[in-house]
Length: 78
Image 1 (cartoon, rainbow, N blue to C red):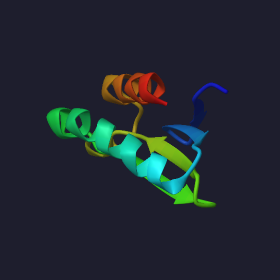
Image 2 (image 1 turned 90 degrees about the vertical axis):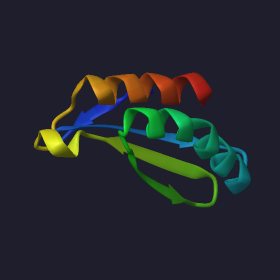
Image 3 (image 1 turned 30 degrees about the vertical axis):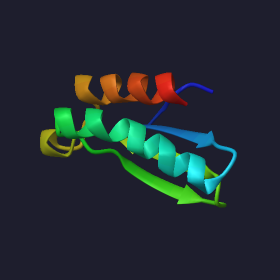
Image 4 (image 1 turned 135 degrees about the vertical axis):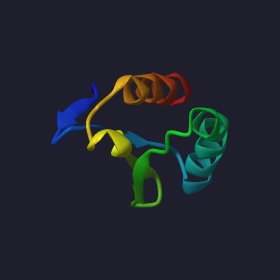
């Protein structure tokens, strides 16, 4: 599944083996998020699913290059 453009955001759901795997993944992603100061919205549910919603808040909630970079980073580690 590709990233879906929904209401000025990029969205995608990922399924992991466990809740702990999601936490591990978020810890891997954390340095990039910190470095770029670009924080994703996400929702964890059903203990092993996570949905990311990427948009740039300070650019009037539009999809920007930062969102594209973050989506590629997420893809690389999932």
